[in-house]
Length: 331
Image (cartoon, rainbow, N blue to C red; front, side, top):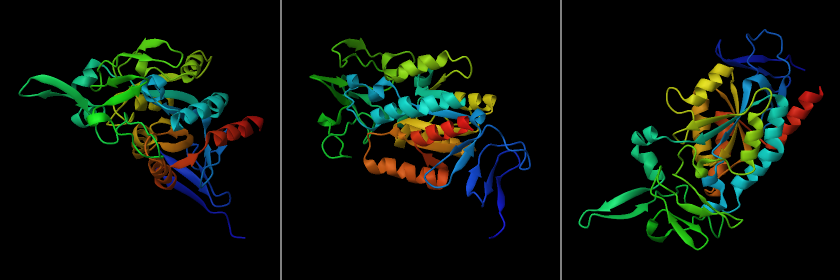
């Protein structure tokens, strides 16, 4: 049998360790490669190579699990995002709290100042208003192809066509037109028959920007934890880690967090955008694939999972995380 080969991957300030004997990546980030092993340590099974994490340097980042993207009030049918909700509720969030892993709720939460400087490409993705020159009359907002407003119907992966390409969501017998980020969403009808003022689209403190039940309850519980309470961080782009500095990155650096477990919706939009930006900035990135969902065609999810495992980081499941935490605590 050959000798064990050990590798140091990275640089003096940010490195992984790899052991050929165990075929495992050590992502615990000790002070030096020769430092004593960090304890406690979380061993996590992934889709390819097992990894080891330091819970104190790890965060569960839950992206955009908000009413606008998941509530029946906006015509959202039960799908992958709702399955992700159940897996977060049953496995990932309890496991993270048991291990002392920081839980971060990273959500759209715009201000008027954000809208004033929002680039046109991002505004287009959420609809916009147009003016008819000769009549000076407002016309319905148009939608970008494949945007978040389209719901799947019929065969998997087939977008439901919208009348005249307007940004319209079916809500019972009502048709609602959204005129872009910051526009009023009107009143929406919930499953219990009640109505609620949904507020302005993805603006802070609006009902449509609140967390989807039961995750809102779990967030409230997390705020009251005696140590390591949950934190809510607003974002103003699809990625919560774009640009030179973001509120999320500031928090991660302040807390010494280096490893990120990703969950949320939509997998191929806000989740992958944040994932790849974090990867480029040197964070360890793990996708919890059954805690991520999208309304896009199935191949969209498959593409992100493939690249997350092969290039950007690792892919695991919520049950993998729960088992790893149970094994760690039981040691």
